[in-house]
Amino acid sequence: AISMVIYGMMRLGIRDDRLMKIVSEHMIRIGFDHTEPVSLCCLAYAYAKLEYWNDNIFAGLGRALVDGVKDLSPGQLIMASLCFSASSGNLKESHFVMDELLRNAERRLGDFDNRALSTIAFAAGKYYLLKEDVETYKINTGMMGMTFDAQNPFAKEIWQQVKNRTMESFTMTEIN
Image (cartoon, rainbow, N blue to C red):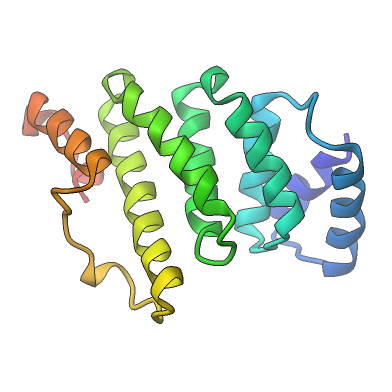
């Protein structure tokens, strides 16, 4: 499939804007209605890794992912969240997609293992930081200024999940 071209380019570290434009226009034309969830996640991942912020591609991928969010495995949900958290700093339209992904993830946090829990927390933190930067037109200063927001329902649920598990059950990688 043509989507494998973009994924292959990402795996090889090739970003050819001319080829990206041609393939992207074709994918926008054919749409994502019949694309499997894993392929949607891999495409979003490839575009995010290549930092090819095409509004139409991310809108199409986002719509398809939101429509099928209940069918995503925890790993696919996390992968999509990582991609759209990155794009939210460049595409304001990605905010709706991330809000929906996180709303779904919040209901399923009990199904996440420790690594998945820490990864979704990272994606959410990155998203909220970039979203704030976009909305206030601040220059992103990195993660250093980020703090736990007790008013954020997603952050509260993450904190509750961490409290329900023993700290010893987390590895150093998951804690960082």
